[in-house]
Image (cartoon, rainbow, N blue to C red):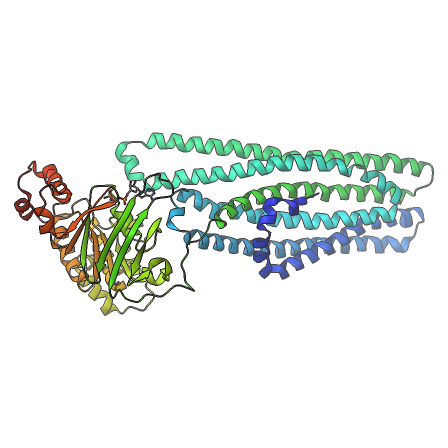
Length: 607
Ligand SMILES: Nc1ncnc2c1ncn2[C@@H]1O[C@H](COP(=O)(O)OP(=O)(O)OP(=O)(O)O)[C@@H](O)[C@H]1O
């Protein structure tokens, strides 16, 4: 009847489910045992009733008048106790199991390759980890409770019925097949609505997380009302799906009850006829009708389990969709571990295309960066600069060509050790809502002394502003570091990089200019930090560009020019010169001879 074991989603989830169930099998076995005892005890009730009427009232046996009520008391107490223990064991197993599912799901989500994040929003992913697992847990607990206890109780009742009168039992069983049709039909509807419902929670969460993280934009353009309307739309759609679900879920019970009443009616009609004609005792009839009623209770419960099964399968389907996504290939076991960058990095005819794009972001890039060199990449917006540096920590893989680290293809390296060797400072510094100290030590796999921490802050020029904070390095920085200024956040990011002591430093310079004091402090810090390391900077500041030992000009995903600043300036028809001219014209309204101008403009001028 509950043929969920033939369901394709269940078949797909089965292996995972067995892995999740395994550690809690003893709890489950105990729960099932309690259900069996409870069911056995329940089936004693109609039999006792039969005995009470036939032996005590008809045969007038006074001894049994005391024993039978006492037996009733014991039966009901044992029934209650087993129900309690069964709920406890099964719920405990379900809660622990789903906690494991949540952990596995989070571990999977966090290990997905970067490319997997763009297509599905964070809010929606979050909803799969928190909400779908919750539904799964509710479902599992319900399924086990309703399915197991009710199945055993139904079997127990059937045994009692057969024991009392097999012929009459067969008659009332005639109605059972009719229960299958609504269970199947409504079950399908529940599954569909449940999936829709869970998807809608994901949409609502997505909207919530997006608007909360963009609250500044919303306020600055005054779009609060639009966002409220959008949210209301999501919320109303959610409610209407919920209502649909409630309708289907509650449809089963009355249908099952009516069919059950039909069975009980048959029993009363046929049984009553037999009592009148003296072929059945009154006790058997009362016991029989009680058992028949008690049989429909678990059958109704089996109908309810159907809704739990269907919502769980819908949740399992959504959880599977995440767990089926391939993990990032880290080469942890087979990859070569890197500990330094001794000779350098080379790109060999590297091209790259984002999976959702038709045009390549990088085309036939070949370049060699010897160890220790300070290299700058310049180019117009969207030319592929960030994409180029993102290939180095293997956030993405080249579509063709290869990148070598000390002569070894990046694809053959242990990614974790590779990333340990790379220090990445992005434009928008990401800080956790923790203390400065915790942010500095985040992800470090070694102990750091206070002296070392202070030295790192000193070399990042971060000591002055931290000394002015109430709790110094133990001050919390707020969500994404909002309690700090842009320049302060950058200096913390630099100190973090110093502690990681990477062989390759990748800096994506901020496009918006910082105030000149911050700029100066950061530049000084950088000069110190870059010493002895290979550095690649996506450069926007003239000061960086001037000091770079080698420059690459990227345009349309290709390297169009390379050389030193002075060499590139000499090419009057070159892209480098026109890039500089365009940037200077934008701010100075000038287009004169750029060699001289570039030497004169302030160092914090951004490109
Ligand atoms: N995650 C992504 N998915 C799809 N396309 C992307 C993704 N990131 C960048 N692109 C596309 O790749 C191209 C190069 O982008 P990239 O960010 O590398 O340029 P950029 O030179 O760093 O630009 P900017 O200076 O404005 O930061 C652009 O056309 C961009 O739209």
